[in-house]
Image (tube, rainbow, N blue to C red; front, side, top):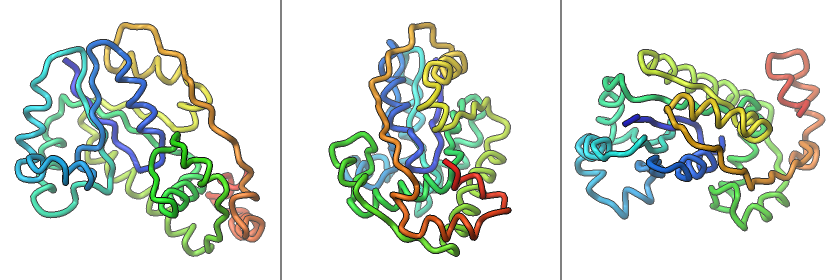
Length: 228
């Protein structure tokens, strides 16, 4: 059995990837076990987090995994899971990143405003109508933070088998990306058809101060985020 984790920031397509993986016979990918809502409904995880993970990976099948975000399990005894997972070097890491950190920030802000985190839900229509004004300082801080956290956890799990895929490839080059995941997890099955249609919005329609930010970041290493 292949043991794995989908490791990511929020708003990077992890729910979509999980749903795809769960369509393969013998593969089971649980949701965010350390999401506060799941912890509230399953107190066993909070009380005995490491023991819960050990039992999780005992079950049979082709593959078993779960979603884990960088901002989870950072308090109290939940922190025990990180050294445990890092020490279990046979656990495969699917490192899911979003290249365009501006789009990531916008998606996070919109989800926070409507309290909805499933990108493909009915409330997605409401998020599409939201326009934001994000300061240059906030953008710069978040661009650096997103990147720093990704690099920190890449280093922490460097001894694990690791596959890095991007949100952009998952959406734009779905079959090739899922084929790479199948190969990584040793899944021998046809790739299910993708039913996801992502509405492309102009950044100028999402940010009221888009042009000012674009001008401010011109010539920086973050400049490309404003060209999508």
